[in-house]
Image 1 (cartoon, helix red, strand yellow):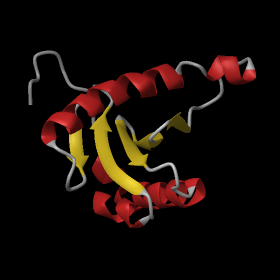
Image 2 (cartoon, rainbow, N blue to C red; image 1 turned 60 degrees about the vertical axis):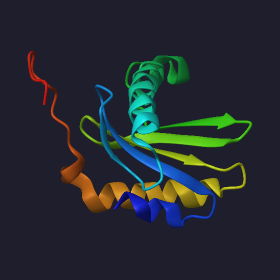
Image 3 (tube, one colour; image 1 turned 120 degrees about the vertical axis):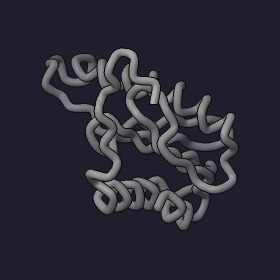
Length: 126
């Protein structure tokens, strides 16, 4: 299902990750090492992003929806897919930001509960 995001012109990779930084799925062409490294890093990014809501509106009530990061070589989009699961997409500088965001939301709705990652228990190494 992640491959569907790549139908947007300029989309390069899609990655599904758990809150604790484990790769849950990746699009074809994204190597295992890069996917695992990115999943770990993106886990930290979603945590930092979620913790900055008070900076945005002065309360702790603001719910994080999406992080967008611009790089010289393109864009990174990160949003919550379901409880404990996040969807990240890498795209070229020319990508239509509206199109990629809409496609990501459609994907999240389509696979909904299948993407839930319950927190791991201490000693659970699966």
